[in-house]
Image 1 (cartoon, helix red, strand yellow):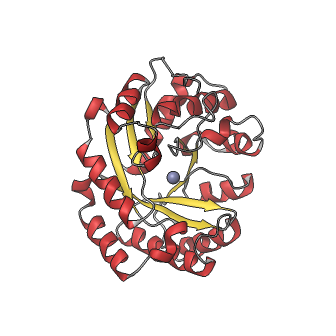
Image 2: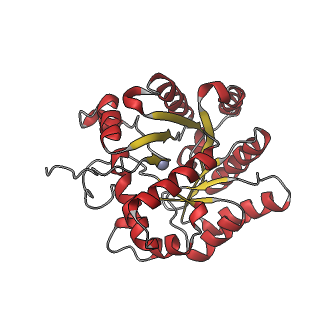
Length: 281
Ligand SMILES: [Zn+2]
């Protein structure tokens, strides 16, 4: 297998979405220490570790606390149940989420997610996905915490639910981030109007992808964050290799190219946006 290309400039990056606990890393003999050392070497100084189930919520929180500061990388976590896992959501899950959210300030829990709808894989029944999404949206409002939205092939229903919460005043003024945005330009603009950030990752670098660069071009600068969704969706020029937060620089470079600014400028803006999104210093 070919060697990955690494960024070697002086910009600093915030990877706002990386599942660094994923089993794929273990299977590839990549340790957490390796990941964090490569972060430092590539200018990635902050990483948020998102969850997709109760199990990975616990793992993300443990990891963010255990490894925070290792190799001078600041780590944060989220807790939440992904639409794929909606069928596992019980009263006990909700109790766990509540207990985690109670302690969020000392436990580095900065968001509730990934939550949302995924009609592409349909791994949970759609009505169950909607119900679990709404339950967690209500929790996010109650605990005043941003959400990490996962939406795939479900834009209509997703926007209907968000619009209803928005009209009822049950969305924060800064509701969260539409992670790995794959929706239309029109839908992304409605999300921005509701206050959402838009998260870009590997797909914006893919040569056959015309839609996502168009969304990036039309998303206001103060709403753009960058992410890797590691270990998947590896950006060019490393597409096909395992993804790590250190590759977020290539997402940033592509955004910079689309917007016509330098990578340093794009890195600074998206870093500040990441901090505002998750409410961190
Ligand atoms: Zn993810």
